[in-house]
Length: 264
Image (cartoon, rainbow, N blue to C red; front, side, top):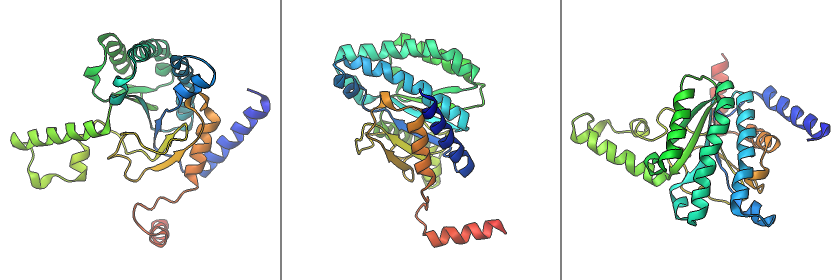
Protein backbone atom coordinates (compact mmCIF):
# COMPACT_ATOMS: atom_id res chain seq x y z
CA UNK A 1 0.00 0.00 0.00
CA UNK A 2 1.35 3.42 -1.00
CA UNK A 3 1.90 6.25 1.46
CA UNK A 4 -0.83 8.24 -0.30
CA UNK A 5 -3.31 5.42 0.19
CA UNK A 6 -2.36 5.05 3.86
CA UNK A 7 -2.88 8.78 4.37
CA UNK A 8 -6.33 8.62 2.75
CA UNK A 9 -7.31 5.74 5.00
CA UNK A 10 -6.05 7.56 8.10
CA UNK A 11 -7.95 10.70 7.12
CA UNK A 12 -11.16 8.72 6.63
CA UNK A 13 -10.68 6.88 9.92
CA UNK A 14 -10.20 10.20 11.75
CA UNK A 15 -13.39 11.60 10.17
CA UNK A 16 -15.31 8.55 11.34
CA UNK A 17 -13.96 8.75 14.87
CA UNK A 18 -14.64 12.49 15.03
CA UNK A 19 -18.25 11.88 13.98
CA UNK A 20 -18.55 9.40 16.80
CA UNK A 21 -21.66 7.55 15.60
CA UNK A 22 -20.32 4.03 15.22
CA UNK A 23 -22.35 0.89 14.62
CA UNK A 24 -22.20 -1.46 17.60
CA UNK A 25 -22.75 -4.52 15.43
CA UNK A 26 -21.66 -4.93 11.80
CA UNK A 27 -22.80 -7.96 9.82
CA UNK A 28 -21.22 -8.86 6.48
CA UNK A 29 -22.34 -11.11 3.64
CA UNK A 30 -18.93 -11.94 2.17
CA UNK A 31 -19.89 -12.50 -1.45
CA UNK A 32 -17.93 -12.72 -4.71
CA UNK A 33 -15.05 -15.06 -3.88
CA UNK A 34 -15.82 -17.40 -6.77
CA UNK A 35 -16.28 -14.59 -9.29
CA UNK A 36 -13.06 -12.94 -8.10
CA UNK A 37 -11.20 -16.20 -8.82
CA UNK A 38 -12.93 -16.86 -12.15
CA UNK A 39 -12.03 -13.36 -13.34
CA UNK A 40 -8.39 -14.29 -12.79
CA UNK A 41 -8.60 -17.78 -14.29
CA UNK A 42 -8.14 -19.39 -10.87
CA UNK A 43 -10.09 -22.17 -9.11
CA UNK A 44 -12.92 -20.98 -6.84
CA UNK A 45 -11.05 -22.00 -3.69
CA UNK A 46 -8.38 -19.40 -4.55
CA UNK A 47 -11.02 -16.71 -4.06
CA UNK A 48 -11.98 -18.13 -0.68
CA UNK A 49 -8.31 -18.27 0.27
CA UNK A 50 -7.75 -14.62 -0.67
CA UNK A 51 -10.92 -13.72 1.19
CA UNK A 52 -9.20 -14.78 4.42
CA UNK A 53 -6.91 -11.76 4.05
CA UNK A 54 -9.99 -9.54 3.90
CA UNK A 55 -11.38 -11.19 7.05
CA UNK A 56 -8.12 -10.56 8.85
CA UNK A 57 -7.93 -6.90 7.80
CA UNK A 58 -11.58 -6.12 8.52
CA UNK A 59 -11.39 -7.81 11.93
CA UNK A 60 -8.32 -5.79 12.88
CA UNK A 61 -9.95 -2.52 11.82
CA UNK A 62 -13.18 -3.24 13.68
CA UNK A 63 -11.11 -3.91 16.78
CA UNK A 64 -9.26 -0.61 16.39
CA UNK A 65 -12.50 1.34 15.97
CA UNK A 66 -14.10 -0.21 19.02
CA UNK A 67 -16.89 -2.06 17.19
CA UNK A 68 -18.52 -4.48 19.62
CA UNK A 69 -19.70 -7.28 17.29
CA UNK A 70 -18.67 -8.36 13.80
CA UNK A 71 -20.80 -11.17 12.35
CA UNK A 72 -19.51 -12.82 9.19
CA UNK A 73 -21.74 -15.02 7.02
CA UNK A 74 -19.08 -17.68 6.68
CA UNK A 75 -20.97 -20.75 5.44
CA UNK A 76 -24.70 -21.05 4.86
CA UNK A 77 -26.87 -24.15 5.13
CA UNK A 78 -27.44 -23.83 1.38
CA UNK A 79 -23.66 -23.95 0.78
CA UNK A 80 -23.69 -27.68 1.61
CA UNK A 81 -25.23 -28.23 -1.83
CA UNK A 82 -22.15 -26.83 -3.61
CA UNK A 83 -19.73 -29.23 -5.41
CA UNK A 84 -18.20 -31.66 -2.93
CA UNK A 85 -14.60 -30.65 -3.66
CA UNK A 86 -15.42 -27.00 -2.95
CA UNK A 87 -17.15 -27.84 0.35
CA UNK A 88 -14.23 -30.04 1.39
CA UNK A 89 -11.80 -27.27 0.48
CA UNK A 90 -13.80 -24.71 2.46
CA UNK A 91 -13.87 -26.91 5.57
CA UNK A 92 -10.12 -27.46 5.31
CA UNK A 93 -9.54 -23.74 4.82
CA UNK A 94 -11.72 -22.96 7.82
CA UNK A 95 -9.79 -25.37 10.03
CA UNK A 96 -6.37 -24.06 9.00
CA UNK A 97 -7.46 -20.43 9.25
CA UNK A 98 -8.64 -20.76 12.85
CA UNK A 99 -5.47 -22.63 13.75
CA UNK A 100 -3.30 -19.91 12.17
CA UNK A 101 -5.25 -16.88 13.37
CA UNK A 102 -6.26 -17.78 16.92
CA UNK A 103 -3.02 -16.49 18.48
CA UNK A 104 -3.52 -13.03 16.96
CA UNK A 105 -7.21 -12.98 17.86
CA UNK A 106 -6.41 -13.82 21.46
CA UNK A 107 -3.53 -11.33 21.59
CA UNK A 108 -5.88 -8.59 20.32
CA UNK A 109 -8.52 -9.37 22.95
CA UNK A 110 -11.00 -10.68 20.32
CA UNK A 111 -13.68 -13.10 21.50
CA UNK A 112 -14.68 -15.77 18.98
CA UNK A 113 -18.27 -17.03 18.92
CA UNK A 114 -20.21 -19.28 16.52
CA UNK A 115 -23.85 -19.41 15.44
CA UNK A 116 -25.67 -21.92 13.25
CA UNK A 117 -26.27 -25.65 13.17
CA UNK A 118 -22.75 -26.42 14.26
CA UNK A 119 -23.41 -30.17 14.56
CA UNK A 120 -23.50 -30.23 10.73
CA UNK A 121 -19.77 -29.42 10.58
CA UNK A 122 -17.15 -32.18 10.21
CA UNK A 123 -15.63 -33.19 13.59
CA UNK A 124 -12.11 -31.84 13.02
CA UNK A 125 -13.03 -28.27 11.92
CA UNK A 126 -15.70 -28.12 14.63
CA UNK A 127 -13.23 -29.19 17.33
CA UNK A 128 -10.76 -26.52 16.19
CA UNK A 129 -13.43 -23.83 16.22
CA UNK A 130 -14.70 -24.83 19.65
CA UNK A 131 -11.15 -24.75 20.98
CA UNK A 132 -10.85 -21.18 19.67
CA UNK A 133 -14.13 -20.23 21.34
CA UNK A 134 -12.96 -21.70 24.64
CA UNK A 135 -9.57 -20.01 24.48
CA UNK A 136 -10.98 -16.53 23.81
CA UNK A 137 -14.15 -16.65 25.91
CA UNK A 138 -12.79 -14.29 28.57
CA UNK A 139 -11.68 -11.62 26.07
CA UNK A 140 -13.49 -8.30 26.29
CA UNK A 141 -12.78 -6.64 22.94
CA UNK A 142 -14.41 -7.25 19.58
CA UNK A 143 -16.79 -10.23 19.39
CA UNK A 144 -15.98 -11.98 16.10
CA UNK A 145 -19.10 -14.02 15.41
CA UNK A 146 -18.98 -16.62 12.63
CA UNK A 147 -22.25 -17.84 11.08
CA UNK A 148 -21.59 -21.45 10.06
CA UNK A 149 -24.07 -23.89 8.56
CA UNK A 150 -26.39 -20.96 9.16
CA UNK A 151 -29.78 -20.18 7.70
CA UNK A 152 -32.12 -17.60 9.20
CA UNK A 153 -35.32 -19.52 8.44
CA UNK A 154 -33.81 -22.53 10.20
CA UNK A 155 -32.84 -20.32 13.14
CA UNK A 156 -36.41 -19.01 13.41
CA UNK A 157 -37.82 -22.55 13.22
CA UNK A 158 -35.38 -23.74 15.89
CA UNK A 159 -36.44 -20.83 18.11
CA UNK A 160 -40.11 -21.63 17.55
CA UNK A 161 -39.60 -25.28 18.48
CA UNK A 162 -37.73 -24.28 21.63
CA UNK A 163 -40.51 -21.87 22.63
CA UNK A 164 -43.19 -24.54 22.06
CA UNK A 165 -41.17 -26.95 24.22
CA UNK A 166 -40.84 -24.32 26.97
CA UNK A 167 -44.61 -23.78 26.90
CA UNK A 168 -45.33 -27.53 27.02
CA UNK A 169 -43.02 -27.91 30.01
CA UNK A 170 -44.70 -25.04 31.83
CA UNK A 171 -41.61 -22.81 31.75
CA UNK A 172 -43.32 -20.16 29.60
CA UNK A 173 -46.91 -18.99 29.23
CA UNK A 174 -48.12 -18.15 25.70
CA UNK A 175 -49.21 -14.69 26.85
CA UNK A 176 -45.58 -13.95 27.83
CA UNK A 177 -44.29 -14.40 24.29
CA UNK A 178 -43.29 -11.06 22.74
CA UNK A 179 -40.47 -9.82 20.51
CA UNK A 180 -38.00 -9.69 23.39
CA UNK A 181 -38.81 -13.23 24.55
CA UNK A 182 -38.63 -14.56 21.00
CA UNK A 183 -35.21 -12.93 20.48
CA UNK A 184 -33.91 -14.77 23.54
CA UNK A 185 -34.44 -18.08 21.72
CA UNK A 186 -32.42 -17.06 18.64
CA UNK A 187 -28.77 -18.00 18.10
CA UNK A 188 -27.88 -14.31 18.59
CA UNK A 189 -29.64 -13.97 21.96
CA UNK A 190 -26.61 -12.39 23.67
CA UNK A 191 -25.91 -9.86 20.90
CA UNK A 192 -27.45 -6.55 19.82
CA UNK A 193 -29.16 -6.58 16.43
CA UNK A 194 -26.87 -5.43 13.59
CA UNK A 195 -26.76 -1.69 13.00
CA UNK A 196 -25.08 -2.10 9.62
CA UNK A 197 -25.25 -4.91 7.06
CA UNK A 198 -22.60 -4.89 4.34
CA UNK A 199 -22.99 -7.03 1.23
CA UNK A 200 -20.14 -7.28 -1.22
CA UNK A 201 -20.23 -8.12 -4.96
CA UNK A 202 -23.28 -5.96 -5.72
CA UNK A 203 -26.00 -8.56 -5.18
CA UNK A 204 -29.23 -6.99 -3.87
CA UNK A 205 -30.54 -9.63 -1.49
CA UNK A 206 -30.06 -10.78 2.10
CA UNK A 207 -29.69 -14.51 1.27
CA UNK A 208 -31.45 -15.96 4.32
CA UNK A 209 -29.17 -14.08 6.72
CA UNK A 210 -30.38 -12.72 10.08
CA UNK A 211 -33.92 -12.09 8.80
CA UNK A 212 -35.37 -11.32 12.24
CA UNK A 213 -32.39 -9.30 13.40
CA UNK A 214 -32.17 -7.10 10.28
CA UNK A 215 -35.60 -5.47 10.81
CA UNK A 216 -34.12 -1.97 11.25
CA UNK A 217 -30.56 -2.53 10.06
CA UNK A 218 -28.99 -0.07 7.61
CA UNK A 219 -27.93 -1.89 4.42
CA UNK A 220 -24.84 -1.04 2.39
CA UNK A 221 -24.16 -2.83 -0.90
CA UNK A 222 -20.84 -2.49 -2.72
CA UNK A 223 -19.86 -3.95 -6.11
CA UNK A 224 -16.44 -4.85 -4.70
CA UNK A 225 -15.83 -8.60 -4.47
CA UNK A 226 -15.03 -9.83 -0.96
CA UNK A 227 -11.33 -10.64 -1.66
CA UNK A 228 -10.84 -6.97 -2.63
CA UNK A 229 -12.78 -5.60 0.36
CA UNK A 230 -10.25 -4.24 2.82
CA UNK A 231 -9.82 -1.44 5.35
CA UNK A 232 -10.69 1.42 3.03
CA UNK A 233 -13.88 -0.27 1.81
CA UNK A 234 -14.94 -0.97 5.40
CA UNK A 235 -14.36 2.64 6.41
CA UNK A 236 -16.32 3.88 3.40
CA UNK A 237 -19.27 1.70 4.46
CA UNK A 238 -19.14 3.02 8.03
CA UNK A 239 -18.82 6.62 6.80
CA UNK A 240 -21.91 6.11 4.64
CA UNK A 241 -23.74 4.68 7.67
CA UNK A 242 -22.88 7.77 9.69
CA UNK A 243 -24.70 9.98 7.17
CA UNK A 244 -28.00 8.18 7.64
CA UNK A 245 -30.85 9.01 9.97
CA UNK A 246 -32.15 5.94 11.76
CA UNK A 247 -35.81 6.58 12.52
CA UNK A 248 -37.09 3.14 13.63
CA UNK A 249 -40.54 3.99 12.28
CA UNK A 250 -40.62 7.53 13.69
CA UNK A 251 -40.50 10.82 11.78
CA UNK A 252 -37.49 13.12 11.57
CA UNK A 253 -39.43 15.71 13.57
CA UNK A 254 -40.07 13.24 16.38
CA UNK A 255 -36.40 12.33 16.57
CA UNK A 256 -35.36 15.99 16.61
CA UNK A 257 -37.81 16.65 19.43
CA UNK A 258 -36.53 13.66 21.43
CA UNK A 259 -32.94 14.77 20.96
CA UNK A 260 -33.88 18.24 22.21
CA UNK A 261 -35.49 16.78 25.30
CA UNK A 262 -32.52 14.52 26.03
CA UNK A 263 -30.12 17.47 25.97
CA UNK A 264 -32.01 19.31 28.73
